[in-house]
Image 1 (cartoon, helix red, strand yellow):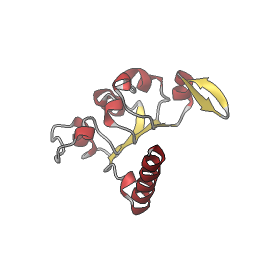
Image 2 (cartoon, rainbow, N blue to C red):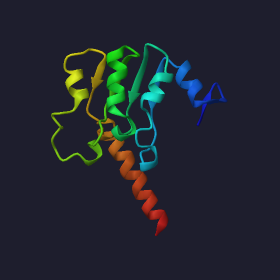
Image 3 (cartoon, rainbow, N blue to C red):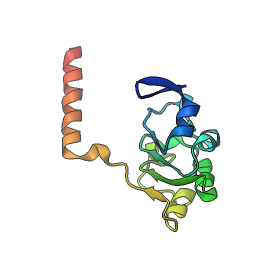
Image 4 (spheres, rainbow, N blue to C red):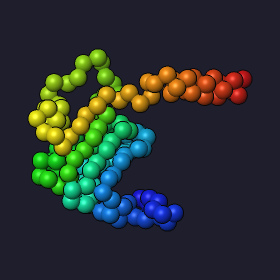
Length: 136
């Protein structure tokens, strides 16, 4: 995989190793389930921060937890967890990341609410309406 750095393509491994902050912003499909796991965490700089605002299924939560506990990662911030795409109204009480975050300050978990603001909803509705009308 290739990523862009200063308008130059670099190898994904290089990017992981060189970055202080790794922010995951990719679409989810079955081919990239557990896209970030122990291999990626091991390539990251010691004391890097990891942020996921995409989908929980993209990250192997056990590997993330190990990276936090071991001190490999300095911290992480998530607004998604594994399985939240099929959320049925209750948070799984057995989620080890939630348990860990409740007693450690290097993991922050927030609600996935970025798209729920008034402006975001309005722009989304406008986009979908225009898209629909262009197909008629």
